[in-house]
Amino acid sequence: MDGGHAERVSSPRVGVRRVLLAIVLWTAVCAVPGIAGAESFASRWDRDFRNAIHDPNAPLRQLQLEFDRNRALQSGGENTTGLSVNPTWPVPALGIVPRSVVNLSLPVAFVPRGGLGDLEVYDTFVLDVAGFGSLGMGPALIAPSATEDALGQGKWQLGIAPVLSVTAWPQWTIGFTARDYASVGGEASRPAVSQLLVEPALTRTFSNGWFAGHSDFDWQVDWHHDEVTLPIGIQVGRAFDLAGYALSLSVEDAFVPVRPQ
Image (tube, rainbow, N blue to C red; front, side, top):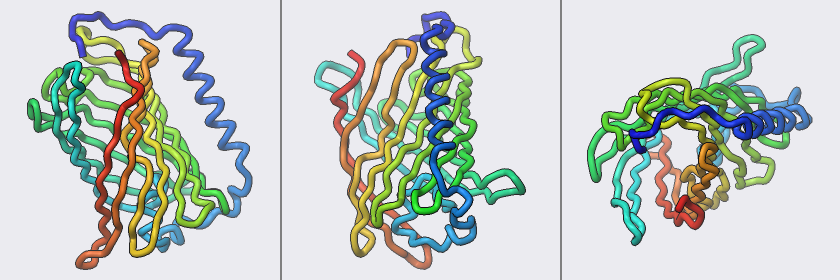
């Protein structure tokens, strides 16, 4: 990010888009029938791990480690290598408060320079819908924890995190996890941030724990500059048991046909 720009205030167009997005998401929540007949939180724990691992709303306590290598374009840039540490843990329902899934993500860069990136945390409150899947929404936060300017945006960011998971078809998981952020403070010398991050979910499971689907790199929208980054790719992997622990290993690749100039 360029540290020479002063912070800018979101335009009215950005505010209208965010309001419309929230209205559409909550309308979808209210329109889906069958919420009262959803499976219980306890029974969800007994689902087949091979299918549940692909469900962003599944009540699984897990640790995800994602190793990434991004190759620079021929027109310029640098090759980058890093690791993303992503623990996830479920919180059972408490009274009228539905169950939730807490996600934490901390990127660690190795190449071209080492250090920590910005810490992201979001807590999605989930409604289970019998015969359909689940959906939810909750608060989201990005903390400017990066150890170097190049590894983060230098801004505290608040937002919402809508999630949709459709598991009505056997062996398929379809949906997304989204986070819509706007900066609320941080380094005055860094530009304001207004961004939408969407992690798609499209996975088909096969026998013996094998699975394949769309890669889970984030789609990104920069509301300030009307710029879109859209990776398209494939993921292949396998879920299995090892010494009493449930593991899932996969490889994925993606190309970015839509990106800022």
